Amino acid sequence: MRIAIPFYEGLIFQHFGHAKHFKIYEIENHQVLMEFIAEAEATGHQAVAEMLQSLDVKAVICGNIGEDAMQALNDAGILFYGGVAGQADDAITDLVNGALAYDPDIRCTRHDDCDCGGNCSSCAGDCGHCG
Image (cartoon, rainbow, N blue to C red; front, side):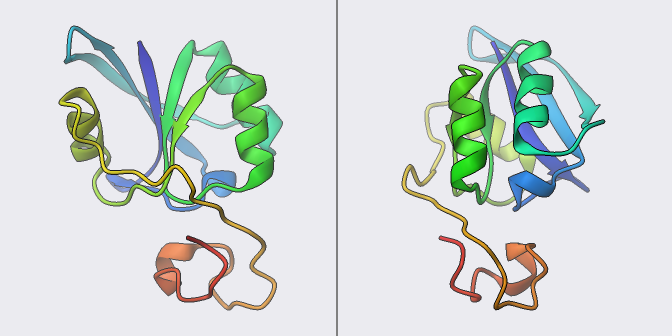
């Protein structure tokens, strides 16, 4: 099974819709068999979901995720685990071990009133638009 994580400098990038890189993990029998970085060549939720689908990704671990991205992933048949922060490698280890802490109700809305520029990690979610 392939699992993708929006990725930046080892961390789970906290704004799915703006991720430029995804770390892809191949998981089998509760072990990581391989990993690689995929670059999103196109923009937009649908394009990213289609790219992940073309890489045979079956699930995404992410931080904040908006309704449009959720719908694109659902349409592509990709599960998602939102509300996760920290090191990407730690998150995949937690998932493999059945211990991933995630928030199934995470929702990220627009950031029009916040100086975070859509990067919730920069405002720690204090903008009130994420979480």
